[in-house]
Amino acid sequence: MTNLRLPAVDRLLQQLAASIAVYGRQPVTACVRAELAAAREGARGGLPLPDEAALLEAVRRRAEAAARPRLRPVFNLSGTVLHTNLGRAPLAAEAIARLVEAAGAPCALEYDLASGGRGDRDDLVSPLLAELVANGDPGIAATVVNNNAAAVLLCLNALAQGKEAVVSRGELVEIGGAFRIPDVMRRAQVRLVEVGTTNRTHAADYADAIGPRTALLMKVHTSNYAVTGFTKAVDAAEVARLAHAAGLPFLVDLGSGTLCDFAAYGLPPEPTPQQALAAGADLVTFSGDKLLGGPQAGLIVGRRELVARIKKNPLKRALRVGKTTLAALEATLALYRDPDRLQQRLPTLRLLTRPQAEIEAAARRVHPAVQAAVGDFAAVTVEACASQIGSGALPVERLPSAGLVLRPAARRPGKALLALEAAFRALPVPVIGRIRDDALHFDLRCLESGDEAGFVAQLDGFDPGGRGNPA
Ligand SMILES: *Cc1c(COP(=O)(O)O)cnc(C)c1O
Image 1 (cartoon, helix red, strand yellow):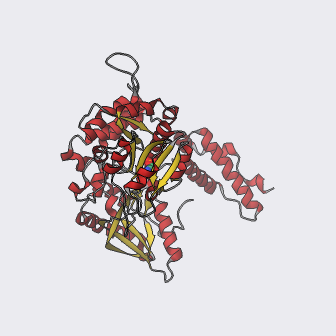
Image 2: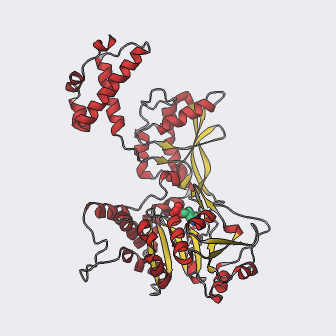
Image 3: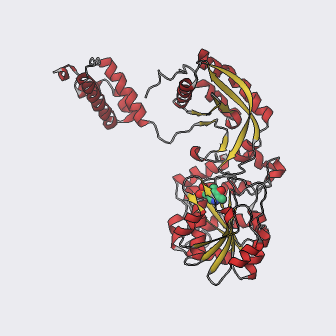
């Protein structure tokens, strides 16, 4: 009976012309039906029926929420620069421009413009990579797949299927999620031969493990943890010598793999593919979107004949990258040709090397707006902090940084903190911080000066308790 008092769908739609113009008739109609159903459901539970104005407002809000993309930009104030859950490396302007160009028009992805014949998509970046990591050595080639996990899987399957790969026990790492070297070996149909112990592995351990079924020796950069104390690892040059003496290839999974000398930028040193190849590695694999600062990709660089074998493997086709990735990767790699401007143009390097004093100045600039936004819900202070590089790179090192610390006024801050964190997440551009020691911490390293105005503007009308936020 109460149903009779709800307006008809068509009657509501007549008053929703503005929403229909933005979102389309069908999506808005679906929202009208959903709101009417919700109102009927509420009435059955004893709630009063909403009036027409309230219904229209609810439909408008529902239509807006439904149209909002799920993949949305956020402010990464988490203190982790290369945050896997927040998309890792932000791309350089040059890479974004090339990616957009490739996305919207036909491009010579596998087309040789000189001959008019079929081309190879790896040729778009292979010579550039050889130039950057091996001074253009013609014996060095590269191939690109979806991510570094795929690169490792592909190398192992192509070079060691049905055979054995020798790895130190101290390097059988798990890299977040489900990437564990022993599991990847199994999926690649390679038998793992573990040598040494968790903390110590000697050259003789590798030598003793080499037998008739051995296909390769492998080293994994233990990028996301550090073993300290009574430790011994065999360096890459020595493992390379042992592999080559037995006529076997030597594979190095670098994980992060920066192409520049981090120490020259005052950053903790990180191994490079240049060093691995110079030490005798036949193949190195590394991520495109970690320290390299490019798109998600897995790069395989090394001896041309091994790369050719890898490219013939059917998995390569399943794991290959698309034109937007290659466009962004080529543009990112090209930035490394001009080291003088790299720090300024590559966001990852720019963010990692941002001086603490500059970050602190940014924190002081936005502090009044944040304190005004949270009012007496929380006290906001500017404090020094320490950023993490993230993505498993350099797990122990911290970069001196600065940010805002928000301490709720509530005596037992647990719930207030969660509400405050949720309110910042509900902003049009969600702000992602980190809760620690009964406070919400915003590390401002990744809030660059160009982002400050937008960050502050959206705090207008902020509700720190989160109660007024639309669902
Ligand atoms: C991060 C990492 C991987 C996985 O790389 P993705 O690009 O995330 O797939 C593999 N090995 C090591 C050592 C890593 O650090």
